Image (tube, rainbow, N blue to C red; front, side, top):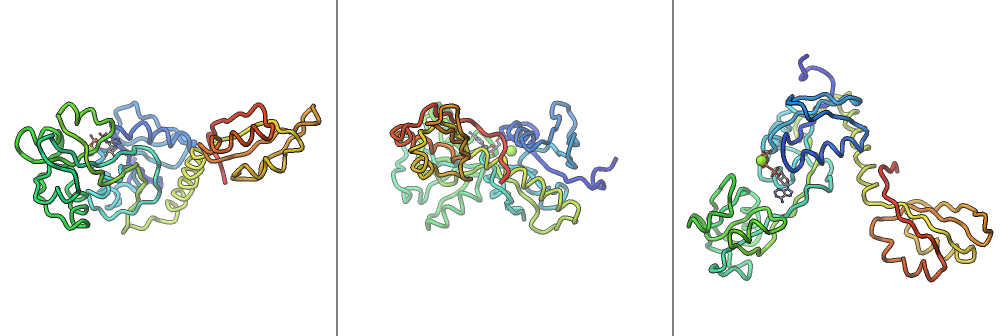
Length: 292
Ligand code: ATP
Ligand code: MG
């Protein structure tokens, strides 16, 4: 079957790399199952009108721009550096990383001005050039496709600009982090010029609303506790509930159970006041999906 012709939405994801598992997991949480353990490069989803194209991440922006794939999941760093005509439809909250300047000990790099006149090795010349332009700096850029960290030791560059997470690779190459210049995360992109046909646009809308529910659920937690009936109003006020809390009577008439959806991490801000108000059995649970 020619997949270019069937009416399924075509989603490009990274074939093998840091974003692969997380992309598949996101689809799974959206109720969409994709078998990615075969060697096939195009796999139809089992229960959604979607074809998944497994590609190198560098190729995804251009394929999406040209309509070979309708949408794609890729790092924002790659989207910006490829400069393809694509639109970010959704930020996905995983694959977070930072593009950083780093230098060997013997290079003075204390302020941004120290970058002026340096030779910088990087895989992302467009992002670095944008940063230089914004800060009125001039530097020579050397584009490398990998092993950027070794460039100063080889005498090819003074400093580097690369993605840094733990900093271990930098340390092993005797480089020190300095300025962060770009924060990236995985994003869902669509073509900025090719408009989708009505049927496909509908499938994309469905997919997007599922993704939004999953992201909302990730940012939320389900709070459960027992509260003395006399404190109920004060407890309700303390909870920054995404929906109004559910109050359930208990066998002990002096207490009620209160359930609420709250933003993740918020419990720590209110835990003490909840305890002061006599709340007991405070329980915080993860939410898999949340349909607003
Ligand atoms: P491909 O073979 O598809 O070209 P790649 O080697 O270019 O893969 P990966 O190393 O798998 O790419 O990284 C994919 C994306 O993951 C990066 O472009 C970036 O957006 C994101 N990412 C998150 N954390 C890191 C990290 N610590 N180092 C590198 N990339 C990271
Ligand atoms: Mg790549």
